[in-house]
Every structure is written in C-alpha cells, then in structure tokens.
Length: 99
Image (cartoon, rainbow, N blue to C red; front, side):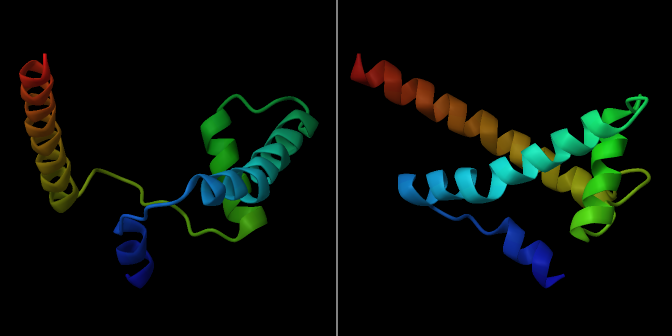
C-alpha cells in the first residue's frame, strides 16, 4: 500500500528533471515496447493487453486490478470530477475579471 500512497503524492518537477525523465526513463521504455511489439509475428490484435503483459513479464510490474471498479474508486473519481468542474468555473471567473 505504500507504493499506492507514494504514487498519489503530487510532485513538482523542474524542466531539467522532466527532460531527464523523458530522455532516460520514458523514451527507452517506449522504444523497448515498440521493438517487442514489432518483433512479434503476427502482430498482437489486442495491443493494450500485449503491452501490459510485456511490462509485467519484462519489467516485473504487478498485474493491474481486474474486474469492476471498487466503490471507493468510483467515489474518488466522482470527487475529482467535481473538483475539476469547480476549478474550471474559478478559472473562467478569473479570466473574466482580467478582461
């Protein structure tokens, strides 16, 4: 559960950190996934499932949860959507005031 809590933390990054992450972490991962995908013959029909299985097998990541969404997740999603609407309204009001 510690990993889930850590992944929920907001992290502010600098442009340099972002560039380093993209260059040294994300791009090599995406290149590896593309190589594995295009090397598979015939190409997999379900691309998403193939990529998930590849990440689980090659990178040792845990399997994602399956089945219906939990009630807690539904509530969190609803809360996030409400907050988005509130922020959008606040942004519109701020923009209108600045005009």
